[in-house]
Length: 109
Image 1 (cartoon, rainbow, N blue to C red):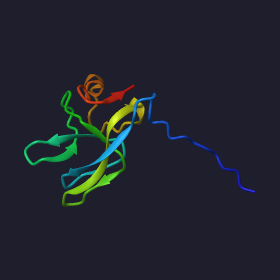
Image 2 (image 1 turned 180 degrees about the horizontal axis):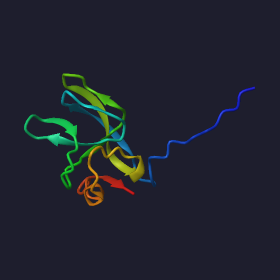
Image 3 (image 1 turned 90 degrees about the horizontal axis):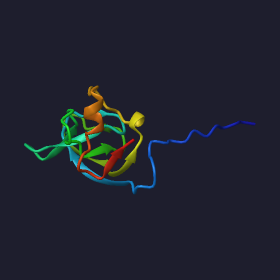
């Protein structure tokens, strides 16, 4: 007899509606799920958030590996997410992390 252990994936907080959509990501991205993303306005594709305050617009819903060309991938465009579950990458400034999603329907707690 095998015993299984249930480990819930508790990255979502509270009752806020969590919504995903599909966006066009630039080439050269290889990041895990729940990585903040932003729009590269010069070419109109999504890229990994660079730490600019208020510029993150979503979180990758799955791991994203676009290879050398751009690709359509899913991302979270709204919801409340656990701070410790987010892959902040190279951004270590807590103030920037806490204000990354200002003006969007994404909350981090």
